[in-house]
Length: 323
Image: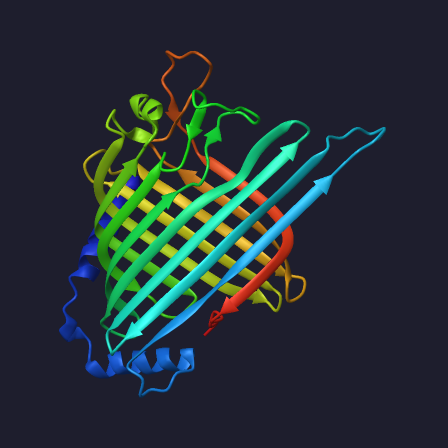
């Protein structure tokens, strides 16, 4: 079934990428531009403009106990996240979309300190418009983290870290086509994608972490799909979802890497929001030990994360158009 899915995905991507621009009329491109200008609130006589916006959030929680019969552990937790975008429309056919996500969270429980969130993600995409909804595209995506991560909470030391800044780091470059019928939904399909994995911690690289060899670098070529969706469910409830799929053409293309996230935002007032975030990752190159025996070969596993938080949230710049 995975092979059939992969074959269908590749054929569809190649077909879409090979579209001849003669299929579309210039009036469709101009209509797309007029709609874009209308959404941005810019006069149609302008030839280029920026659309910039984003969100900053800060959450904090604390619990303390003294002679509490039911028991409990003193704890302090906090996390912060920044999402920003800057999109540029140039002339009639070119668009440049940029997005950045920075997140970091910590939890201190009794005497144990551990991370709850840690991510850096930067993405840029250039589109050459072919119609109101389709374009040829080139995409670059980079992901890593700020601080070291350890296998067990409270652990410290270079000899037991399992991750760090640029360990791993992921760089993805793709050529393909983008379908964007509105500002809620975007689908990028790339039949020609290069993926680089970097592990800049020598001990982890020598151990073959994240699929690299002793050089700390691994390159793959395959097919890639990225789908994002945003929608206002009710007046004060918004949904945001994303899924990335990558298949290595050379090494068993039926094994598809998945990176996905679903977030539901609940607005309390202008500056207070709650959200629940669910994340799922599957990467065949990320191995987990089954036991403490160093001779046991690690196996890939599904990775899940769930975070529920409430706190300060500030939106700035252009709002998301729901049309």
